[in-house]
Length: 319
Length: 305
Image 1: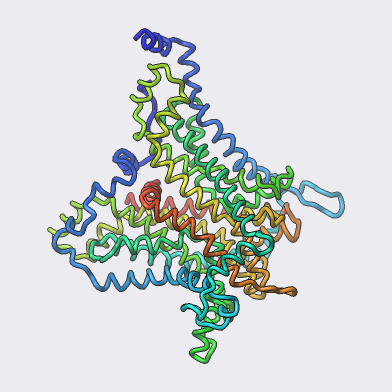
Image 2: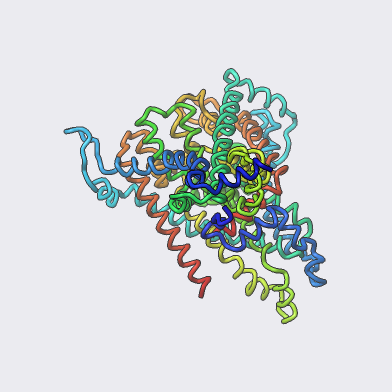
């Protein structure tokens, strides 16, 4: 089995070197501190000003969200948007958000979690198993699979939403949780990432040694390979989670029952309540609900910095 | 030891090897099945649908390419298409330029607190497009947004984010806000793999910082600029979330065919014109793919030159 075709055909040298040194460790292999760049690396106030401007732009809307989540509806409309109002109503707002309309927000949160766990989890599992298979086995039709995956990476999810809706409505799958979960299960780019990662992260000799000891292929995968693939899997999982958590177009098309909505569609429905004939604005709940929606993702990104940064790095040298 | 020997001889024997040839499918198979069902089948079905039309007389009939011919003359579609094309030409360069400047600053080693800036500018990417549009929608709003405060302070209606002239720019601002950090990190990651000795050599040759940026860093970034451009082209042509959400706040300015994707959505939803909606989705998919392909070919050819 030593002649296994280990290199994905179009992977550039950059990707393989990165994979060999281990995702996330590449950064450390190069001097990151300014000392590495010699004495000319004096700090530049101009760059600082430019970056402060971009950062203020990036953080201002988030600051606005936090500030306004602490205001009652009356203060929202009467006080200046970028500073706190006279009363601190954050906890009251959270309470109202969670209980409004018989706790529909919690229902939406539960739906989102279901779609994320089954959809993103399933997508990661399928991508990991298949990526390992592509990296470590040679089988008839392998090149065809490669071609399909490359083509699939180029097709944006939103372009698929309408065709998928048409298909699902023909087979009666719309307005069910499956309508959200099934399309979330495909992650061609995740599969590609695991494939390039597995080539070096799982040494073929280790697999062969396990085979000699009589271990079955799936046992080898689950007891040995999966552990070695873990950093790559975390990256793929994180991006799949973000994509599913933030999904809007697909659930908007597929679902008509508010009880099945994820948070994104639900929040928009709340927001839409403010206009129209029977307008019943609940701005403070929309603001607070939005804040609660982004907190888990922001925390995940802050804690898994190393994973997503190496994932983006691998993606950037992809083609 | 004996088991090991047995395993080794078993591995060498014919039928065992034959089976091993197909083992890969046990791993790849489930993925391929799901990919086929969720990608190839929907596209095929949409293609099929686009060849039919539900007519008052005669019901569902095969009409060949009539839907495509109708689309060619559909002013609603082309207005929306022109809008996203304009959006692409203006918003994408601005966004990528800001991202490029930020990435070069991060990589320059002349910046204080660069890891703070990196994470802070990236943070909007973690915000769902819906929430981003909601927040900016509030900020744009005259009632309790910043626009209202600024206009109030100035005493004139200087900023009108929801006026017909400005609504596309308002959407562009939201999209820029969401993706500057993402593109910055793609560029930054590519800059990190430039070998340090290149900079040292440039320094010995007396190249200043701008010369280094222009002659070493920008060429090193070409591949990622091509990728970021392709992603942005796809994003622009498939624009849906932001305008669809702002539609609630500016219903008179943003119509149901504001972008091609919104048109496809409203056709299959309010109009029940599934066949025509499939046609719109396919045409937009093909146009996007062709333009992305041309950018990639041109981008890589320039690289080889």
